[in-house]
Length: 178
Image 1 (cartoon, rainbow, N blue to C red):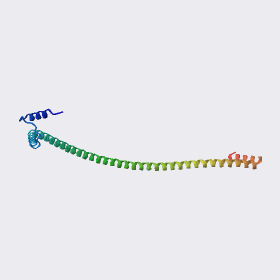
Image 2 (cartoon, rainbow, N blue to C red):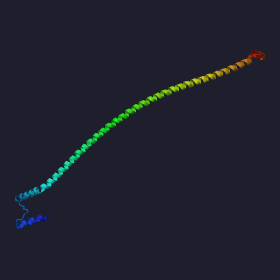
Image 3 (spheres, rainbow, N blue to C red):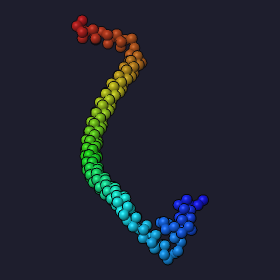
Image 4 (cartoon, rainbow, N blue to C red):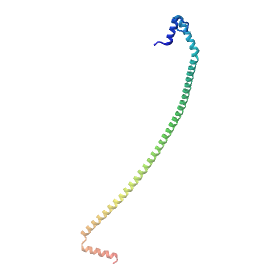
């Protein structure tokens, strides 16, 4: 599709009119057209391009300021978090030391209780042993006494006849007061 402005300029040149138009003579028309174009761009474009560049410069400056502010904020947050980390590490160390001390105290208490329990068990065992020994001794004495009485009865029955028995009874009565 042909541009209407180009078409109009071509027709006016063909008719020989001296209107502003495009000349296709390379040496003559291009330099003039280029000078006009540069002049128009400089005249009108200076303000637009200046405004665009100024706006872009302001945006870049604002972005730099925001980045610097974010960097300062991040640095402050980092410093605060490092401080919090240091405090947390100190607290963890304090808790660990307290736990170690508590463990030592509990260990000492358990050892002392174990020693008391061992001493109590030894005392109980000694008392039980002594009690059992006394009971066994008493039982042995009783058995020995019973055996002695049984043996004495058997010997008396075997050695004592009716005469000897009568004499013993009389003697016992005489001793008692009779």
